[in-house]
Image (tube, rainbow over all chains, first blue to last red; front, side, top):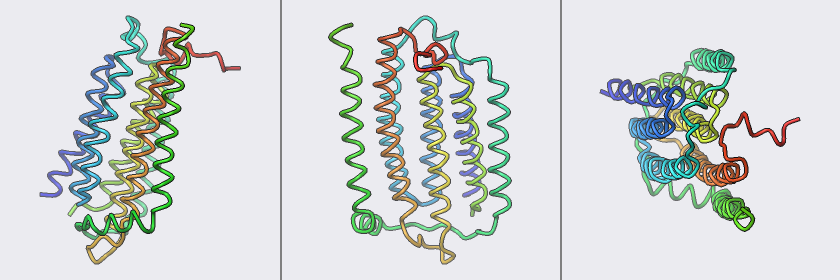
Length: 162
Length: 106
């Protein structure tokens, strides 16, 4: 059962990813990315990381896709269909295949761990997050704040002279 | 039960697809999407490895999940900033084709 779900979700993940990098239409690419991200949430469920699956759907499936589609809509030009790939795509394909083969070979070589995953409790996750990882958590919120302020400043700075 | 190596191979494949996207695409928005794919590949790897940490079948600790949460946070910040930069680029140069954004190229 677990294998069955894994294979279906893997097909959706990789198919969505391939769709992102080969499709000519930018909006279709965003929708393919959504398929891939939701399938990744399913993979987290197979691994019993329910909280991560929830976060994945909320943040990636909700917020990030919306922001990307906004970026597409706000920068939409007639040139979009013609600018999909540049001339170095064969080199890019070779490099990407090489990285995939090297990573895959490394993982196959290190194939010792075969134990089954199991479900964590949310309470333990929260305990760990707010005790051991409390300072990184605060730093992460600061990163988000700075990024948002920076985004506003960068996006607004040209408004008065444009 | 699905072994760890299956998840790792999936994550390697997804990462490779993301690398191809970053290097071959011309639209800045599509490059950001490919970076998201790579971040997701890393997250799959982290969660799978963390869930297989302990032979007893329980999650030994939640560090892997928490680091994945931090990665998602950073990805959200990155997308926000990338969108601001892309909008600015579009406003100044009327294009999002990264081949034509060559002002800082030497």
